[in-house]
Amino acid sequence: MRVLVAGLIGGIVMFIWGAVAHMALGLGNLGIHQPANEDVVLSTLHQGLGMQSGVYILPSVDPSKMSDPAVVTAYSEKTKVSPYAWVVYMPQSDNLMQMGPQLGRQWASDTLSSLALAFVMGLAAFSFSRRLSLAVVLAVFAWLSTMVPYWNWYRFPLDFTLAALVEQLLGWLLAGAAMAWWLGRSERSRV
Image (cartoon, rainbow, N blue to C red; front, side, top):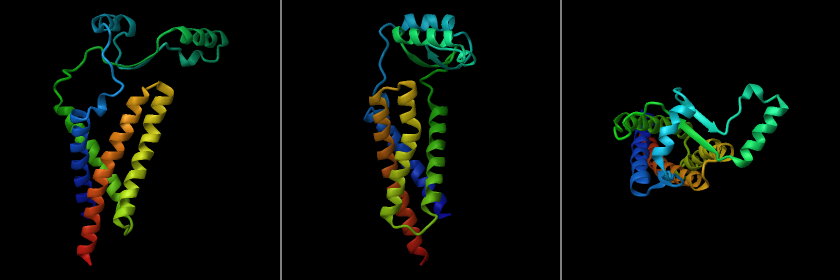
C-alpha cells in the first residue's frame, strides 16, 4: 500500500510540475517555431503526404530500396540540398484546444511512471538521499534513452532536447523527493 500511495503522490507532483513547466515556464515550447506561411504548408499536406496518419521524414527513401546503390546515391544527394522535416501527420486533425483526453492520458502516464519508480524505490530500505538519487538517475536514463536519440537521428532541436532534460530532471527531483519522503515516513511508522 505504501508503494501505491507513493506512486499516486509522485503522479500528482509530476502532473502539476508538467503544467508549471509548460504553461508558466514555457519549457515545452523551446525549439518549436511558427511557420513563415502556415496556410501554404497546410494546403499542400494532403497532396504531398496523402491520407494516412503517421510520422513522415522528408526527404524520404523507401527502406526496401536501400540496397540499391543508385537509390542511395540519389537520396544522399537530395538530402544535401533539400530541407529536412520530421512530421507527425494527421490528415484530419482533432480540435487541439480540447485537451481533456490528453490531460487524462498525461496524468495516467505520470502516475504509471511514478508507480514504477515507487516500486523500485521501495525494494530496499534506502535512505531518503538514495531514493532521491535513484529518481534523478532514472530521469537522466529516460532522457538519454529517448530524447537524445531523437535529437541525434531525427534532428530534434538542441534547445528542445535540453528543455526536456530540465523538465524531466526537475520533475522527477520534485516527485522523487515526495515519494522518498513518503516511503521513508511509512517505513518509520511501521517500526
